[in-house]
Amino acid sequence: MLFSGGRKEDSAPELPPELGGQGLAWMSAAGSKYIDTEVENAINGVKQMKTLMDKTSKDHQAILHTLEETKRRKEEAVQLAREKEQQLAANQEVCNETMLALWEECKPCLKQTCMRFYSRTCRSGSGLVGRQLEEFLNHSSPFSIWVNGERIDSLLERDQRQERQFEDLEERFGLLEDGVDGIFQDSTQVYGRMYPFFRAPFSGFREAFRPSVQHVRFPVRSERFSRELHPFFQHPHHGFHHLFQPLFEMTQRMLEEAQGGWEHSLGGFASESRNFSDERMVCREIRRNSAGCLRMRDECEKCREILSVDCWQTDPAQSQLREQLEDALRLAERFTRRYDDLLHAFQAEMLNTTSLLDQLNRQFGWVSRLANFTKGNDGFLQVTTVLSKTPNLEDPSAPPDTQVTVQLFDSEPLSLTVPGDISWEDPRFMEIVAEQALQHYKQNVM
Image (cartoon, rainbow, N blue to C red; front, side, top):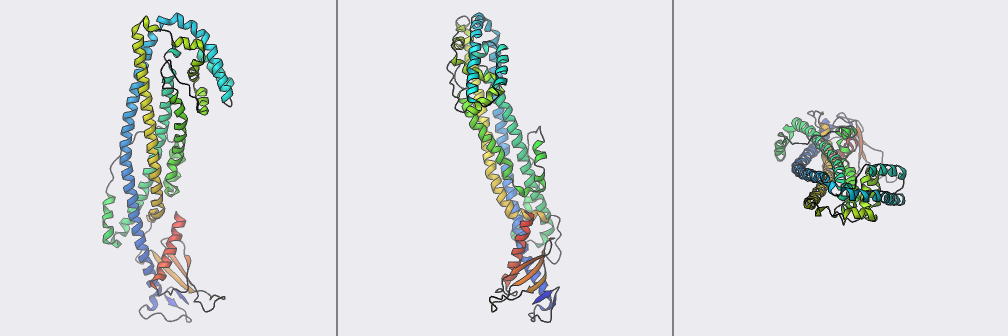
């Protein structure tokens, strides 16, 4: 049987008297009622996304303040270490003659030891590293070994990497906030146009449309990620989780690689441990900073003798300065690790949060696409054609399936099939049609 535009063909059975020529309108109304409920549920789901994002933003603000305080204390400790180093350097002439003689014998051994290790362990670049190391040693003094100065260099280098990680994290978090806010704002437009149709259980949604709390975000120096992830603003359904997954994995690798570096940089001046369990980290460190070779001083007798020079007998203040420098370095290294841990913990939390946001977005985010759609008096779903398909030749006694052509929202007309054992008069009929149409719509927009 065929119904089209409210007219019936001569071969079609009579419509129920209560429907008359309004069969398609009745079907459209029944299907739109189902869609109304799904739209309401989706808008309420977007509210859940917004609530979760607001909570995440508050947590983010708390973490930012903790990071700021940790960074401040780390910088104070590094500044104190530099001051103590300068004070030691100003008084190094006390032992200058003895240390210079030892240094001239220490340098060739130190270079040979470091290059032997590098050539055996690292894949390439030994020639360049050798030239860099020789230049570094020629411009250094025995004082660089005596005060363990590479620890400050390592701290400053680590500080730069942390700054880049923080900027990346902030940019990605900003994209996340903008993405969720965009979905929410589009949903408010849908809400505003549909409000007269909403039932009481959804009236509380009005509260979510009040202006959100203004957040403080640290300034970001680069727009690199904003450019790379610009499509995210147009297509937030691509995935919030993927904003943080690469950064989390990269940070995880860096923390694992840095662990060995911290282990062999935290020892005392004369008892520093050489733990090169992570060879990749050591190779990279030596390539970036020739001062890393100073950690091999224990391998050379004359270098060890520099460490054992007792300047404090001539100037007792030297001993106190060295202890103060050591304390400041340990404190700076502790806050540096604390900063790493905070960044890593927040990224891990964001992975969990964005995973949940993605689930909610896949389930409810489609409603934001209706922001520019105006609902007519006829409802969201229009049934244009109902057609009884050709009977199944394999089972002629089985009722033929029904083909229904509908238009949902502003999409193209869509032909759907309903099993023949469900009469078009059955309330389940239009529920099946509406559910299939909505599923197809979601697949196209998500």
